[in-house]
Every structure is written in C-alpha cells, then in structure tokens.
Length: 228
Image (cartoon, rainbow, N blue to C red; front, side, top):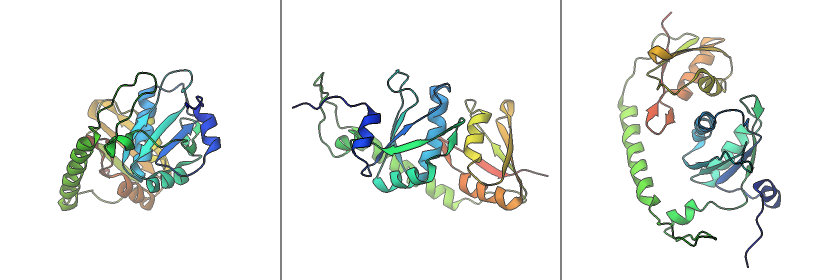
C-alpha cells in the first residue's frame, strides 16, 4: 500500500534518527540557486564526502536543501557544527531527513523504481565513486609530498587562481567561519583575493583550515600569507 505524500517539513518531525541525509530549511531564497549551492557545498564538504546535493526552484522546495553524506558520522558532525550558522543573513536550520537517500540503493547495486513512471535507474554510481576516490588519493599524495612556500606569517591571507564565478560574498561566507575575520577584498580581473584577520594566529588557523580546500571537485583554494 502506497504511503501518502508528506512534505519534507512534516517528515522530519516524525523521525529524528540520524541518517546520512540532512534536510536544511530557512535558506535565503532571494540568493541565486547556484551561489547558494556553492556556499553550502564548501561548508558541508569540510565534514566528509558529499555524495549528492538537491535544491530546487519550485515553490514547494524553495529555501530548502537536501545534502547526502557518505556516512552518518559525517552528517552528524556537520549538523552539530553548522546548525544556526548565519548564511546569507539567515541561520541554517538542519535536521536529519525522513528517509534514506535512493543513492545508497544504487551504490549497493539495487534497482530503484519511480513510483509513477516505473523506470529502472541503472546502478552506475559505484564506478563514478571509485574514479573520484582514486583521483582524490592521487591528489592527496601530491599535496602531502609538496612543499609550498606560504610566505612570512602575518594577519592577511592571499588567495590566488580563483575561477571567474567566485564572488566576494561566497568567499566571505567561507572565511568568516574562522575567528577574527575582519574583511575581504576580491580582485576579479586578476583572480585574487585578500582576507584580513585581527591577528597573525587567527590568520594561520584559517590558512591551515582552507589551504587546498576544494571549492569544486576540480578547483582547490590556493591560500598563503600576503606580502607586507
């Protein structure tokens, strides 16, 4: 017997058990969808591998997002750390989703049928995940074996080789997570940004936390101390 449709807001009230999928509400729906996705990705992927992120422009799902982690531990840590964080002037309201994501059925090699269309979705995700994991291991090996000159320690950081789609607001949402954040200045024409903290120690914490951080699967942040 088919269960009646439940809006996600009603689903989370019925079941608070930890799951790999987080349900986020209260997002600022005046922000462009791609900009919000970018900020949520860089925030949540710090806690573990994000397998899927779902956001829609439809009336039912505006201001909401579903984020699927690889395991429950990652999701639990992200929920604990990010609940209430201000993103685009609104606090994140985070709960565990009602149901386990379909993506895990695909990973386990099961077939999933759409209730209305009864179309089979091919379980081709495992091969993609294996390629991503191999690529990540390769990149981590290169990173661990490289000795980068990060400059003389001071309270201003320099971010280099930024892609054109990155905005000042996106970067500020990322760097303001770290104590002592003061201001940011983006120079789009040169693909550079300067981030100032109140003291050297605070800047160092941010540098260690965000250096080589993936803002997209293909792009890492290049962070070092700015020259005085």
